[in-house]
Image (cartoon, rainbow, N blue to C red; front, side, top):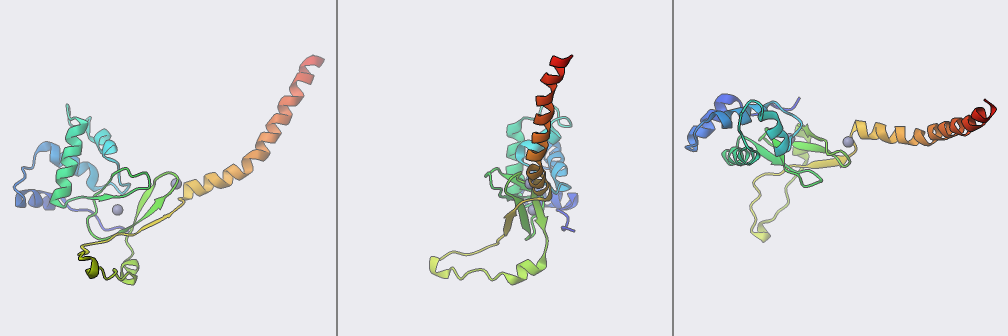
Length: 173
Ligand SMILES: [Zn+2]
Ligand SMILES: [Zn+2]
């Protein structure tokens, strides 16, 4: 099971530490994302909160997500379509990414992290702070769609045969 995200008290503490007020909007948006494991897009976060936060604009949601990112209570994950995905898990973890439907799933495998030795980039005068690995491929649903697609031509042929027969039937009638 993936480790849970930051708790509400931790969120409030992070706000206080950065001199950021815990407004209703910020709290609701945090609550809307902290239990999600599907790495929603900012638009999906907006859709989730707009009914409980009357008058909230898309821009406000984007701004709050930015603030939460700066506070370190959420992270941003990548996706193949370059859409920003909100990730309430800020500890080091990795992801499975479906190349077709953009499904983004957490992988909390300590063994992966232990196998990785970050490259020596001192020559580039770069300091590595963290890393995350994306394993790309096809999710179960997309694989199933593929195998269903392989069966489809046979079904289509059958339908065509049935249609070809019907004019004759009509002519007889
Ligand atoms: Zn998929
Ligand atoms: Zn994640």
